[in-house]
Image (cartoon, rainbow, N blue to C red; front, side):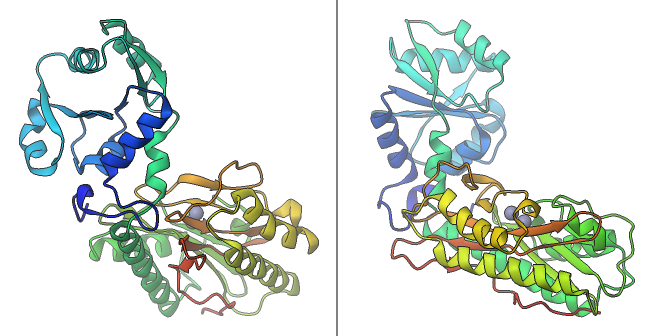
Length: 372
Ligand code: ZN
Ligand code: ZN
């Protein structure tokens, strides 16, 4: 992470540090404390990048636990927490710490991360009438409001991805295999000190009709639609972008679904605003695609949050309960997939801001371009 979390200000929400914001959330949740065990959440809260740690936090508690292997790293990376080094068996040490700090109370745990077995072992070793209960993704909710440092990291990752799109299209697609194009993109990311935030999708012709196609040995031909979906991870933050291009003349229906998908993308982008429901934004794109006769061919949600993870809260889809908040960074990625023929997806990454003007971090042009 580029900066210690305690120094960065959430964008448009509250000028408190991450641990302070979490303490407030814990206090209003009714838990006496929260035990954080998911590594990505620990890194978010403390800056710690090791693989074995836990955080116990509550209104008057801010304890960071790790084992002796990470004592030096904790001393360098973790500020503002009482660091305790667990001797002996790890879970027993964690149980001892929670029992000591939250006597007779209720501690929230990250049940979606802990295995049943770990949860049971932990519970067995608690003392003093302490109980555990699922906290339901409390840190994941905090992580939604990206601060300025985080938005800058995501924007830099998006910019790198945009520049690689330009390179791919200048280099040409026809005659190359999907796997070659994907491999080239990954190589360029690494040369820039980044990693792919997921295995890139390069899907030509009929392969483009599958939203999760894996790049294979198929050679890209002239006169096809090619869907490319890729993102970089730079300084711990991900980007995500999809562009669809044509390699020469394409049939009328291919052009038509491109136009419909583009309008759906643009209309949904205009609708993105803090306070609006994620299902409603999905509906803007979905209604447009449905009216054009392709509702059944848009078989996935409109988008997802992006940050330290490529898929994080919120979720934009017809059944999402989420409401957009300032600081959310989300994708808007409608698609139309005609089985056995071809597909189109156009994906941008936007920051939801407090002033109602959302910022699009994906700047690669979206008019249908012809690539040789
Ligand atoms: Zn994507
Ligand atoms: Zn995506």
